[in-house]
Image (cartoon, one colour):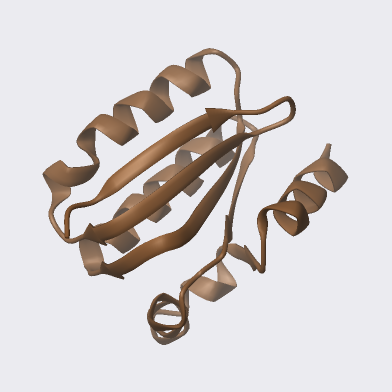
Length: 117
């Protein structure tokens, strides 16, 4: 299954829907370019919805870290929501659950982002 994404610009944040498998670096290139465009438009708050995500390896983890790092460098934040159990396990094993804010759904993520404002 290929990696797909959809980006929705909302009033206070940008929602990124991830689906499929993220296992090769070139799969996320276009999405990361789009991220740079959003940051250049002064959009700094991101919610990553992983509801349709099936599998990722270190490439996927690196992509998530890239989004978080770029958002924070711009003075923003990235929060992950709707994480499937197999991805949650990977986040725990790699201790990335200590770096990312991981919440149950978009509403909770939006609430966290708005508190930071």
